[in-house]
Amino acid sequence: MNEKEFEEQLQAISDRVLSKALSQNEETNYTESLFESIRHINEYGQDFWYARELQVALEYTEWRNFCKVIDKAKEACKGSDIAVSDHFVEVNKIVSAGATTKDIGDIELSRYACYLIVQNGDPRKKVIALGQTYFAVKTRQQELVDTFEDLSEDTKRLATRNEMKRHNKSLAEAANMAGITDPRDYAIFQNKGYQGLYGGLGRKEIHERKGLKKSQDILDFMGSTELAANLFRATQTDEKLRREKIVGKAAANNTHYEVGKKVRQTIKELGGTMPEDLPTPEKSIQQIEREEKKKLK
Image 1 (cartoon, rainbow, N blue to C red):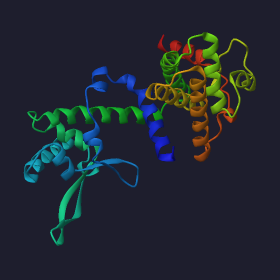
Image 2 (image 1 turned 90 degrees about the horizontal axis):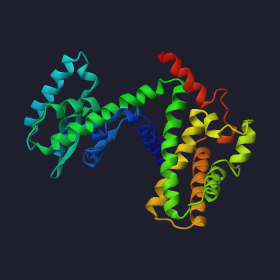
Image 3 (image 1 turned 30 degrees about the vertical axis):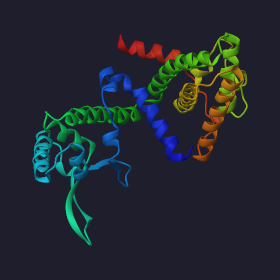
Image 4 (image 1 turned 135 degrees about the vertical axis):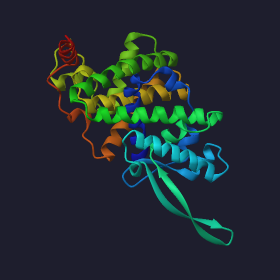
């Protein structure tokens, strides 16, 4: 797994953490492959789409007809007091024309611009409905990601810990399907994942390293970065067990260990801090939850 793949997987996890704000209908009723295939990324790491490529995707045969839709989208942008130039950027492209080349006009569109375009497109086209859902979901997810970045460390911990609980249930189910049905065997299975991620340290050693009481769970005393690494370990092991239909205790244990080890190696390649070297928060997840409940009173 290279750096780009790792970052894509982490982004997918971040989306899952934040997707609770999306309805189930939004999550399941859209196909993104069509619009993902024509997505570009600029030098600032921002997504954009070329209008002429979007024209083809949305099944408009004439550029001039599609420009009418773009004009409506620009008006909608103005109506929202948002600078059109921030989302619709006129560019020239050189294209082949037989034995020669020629310049043609094009427009770099932001995600929001695409959203406005499909909102003003021909509603009779099935692909327009697809596009409306796709860009609505992606725009909403980006808003949530931006919001997530502004959250406090405590709030990030809560969000990621809750997601960890959900995925641990799914991981337990996948392990059960692989043949790990006894609680003791599952404890061994979980320990293998920790050993892979923490350079040989198991749950007990991590617990001791954090200086926790016997009754305290190590996951409740992890910062958001450490929780994210463990969430990545859990989700990838879950998916690998199911995808490869792994059967047998030894095979499942080895899978969990190797995934944990791979996550650790990737963190190292990215220049990150090893999970066992990350600071242990003073507050537990339970303490943060109590504080949040008090704020609501």
